[in-house]
Figure 1 (tube, rainbow, N blue to C red):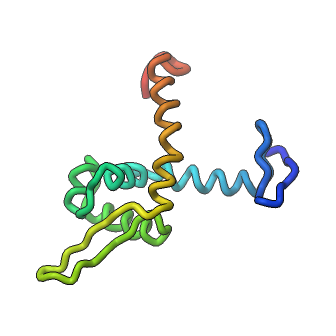
Figure 2 (cartoon, rainbow, N blue to C red; figure 1 turned 45 degrees about the vertical axis):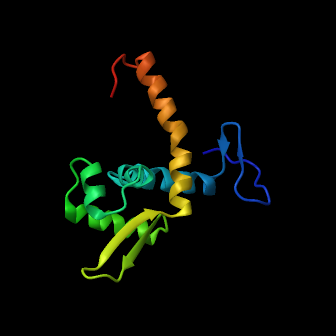
Figure 3 (cartoon, one colour; figure 1 turned 60 degrees about the vertical axis):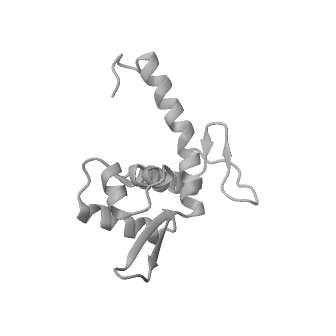
Length: 128
C-alpha cells in the first residue's frame, strides 16, 4: 500500500493512503473480525446471551466443540469475559469485554453499508 506520514499517535491513515504497518494491522483485524463465527458469537453476547447454551442456540450451525474453541480464543483476545460462579453445579457465564463491545460498535457501520448494498443490488444485482 502507499506510504503516508506517520503521526505521533500511530500509523497514518489519510484519505485513501495507509502505510505498510497500518496495512498489516488492518488486514489482521479484518481477518479476525471476519473469521467464521466470531462476529456471530459477539453479536449473540451483545444481544443478551450469557450462557453457553444460549450462545449455541443463537449462533445457528455452530458445533459445541467449535463454539468452545472460539470462546476461548475470544477470551484470550480480551473480547469476551468468562466468569465461573462457584455454585453446585458450577455455572459459567460469558459477557462482552469492553473491547468486544467496542468491536460490535465498530462493525455496526459495516452492517449499514451491507444493507445499502443489498438495497441497491450490489455490483452484480444480487444479494450475497
